[in-house]
Length: 378
Ligand SMILES: *Cc1c(COP(=O)(O)O)cnc(C)c1O
Image (cartoon, rainbow, N blue to C red; front, side, top):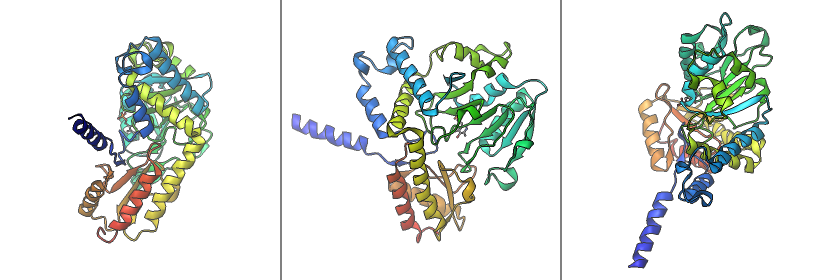
């Protein structure tokens, strides 16, 4: 009896752990090593006899977890002491409101750069709070490019300058950030944070929902130059003021504890790979494998010009632009364990999201499957 049960358990376990190559745009795949560690610590974290989910957020054990995640962020991005790292909730989308509520100054319109669906959403919230000036937009080219901007286009008196570093849906990415921006630069880095090196001191605030490159959904990371938090009028809700969370070290109320714990493990994983310089190289290599294949393919093309292409979200289409064939292709790929390749519903085509945690083996498997599919799907 026991032998039978054991083999059944082993079989079930195998079925449960046979993982696909996950190309979802977000929530996205996590490093398998991290998931295994979470699994091993799930019932009894560090001899506490409980899961991190069940712990008081004021307990020493939990506070050490949160502190470590924060210090890893500071280490990886080399964040100086006049900045604060906050772990908030409400997704990246709440930042579309919090940023203008906290940072807009009357008569100082925001300098805005529009590069896709996520800046559009940010703009919808910004105009409820304050004024803006459109510095540049890629709308006329359907967001297949990043606009060229030079320092003299910016207003030194702007409340801040807003960009999105990687446009998850259109597959474009700022390769070099705009230089010489005179007002605090604010960036939505939801889909490329910690995928490459950048100088945090070029920015006043960067933010990211965790579910693409950092961990599970439910945590939003905000890195803010502390002095900017002083701008907020007291009339805005306490929970929506950055200074509330700076003062309380992201423990003003119950933070998303389990998500922060997993994010901390992801940060440790990045650190163990050699930090951002190593991760950047790995990401460049991964993206190159896929773009090289697409550029040399008779069946596929990438609508984004080389210099604007995202290393995180690779969008591509059949040259025939046959939508039915594209959707059939996604289904065929899914059967092979290559999952989440449909383009965003607003743009169609295919999209391979290859964030930090996506292994190069997944990209190679995708290229092999696309090669095979070329004769069938045109
Ligand atoms: C996914 C995404 C968002 C939205 O994030 P939520 O956490 O779902 O609010 C915002 N901006 C960018 C660039 C994204 O990729």
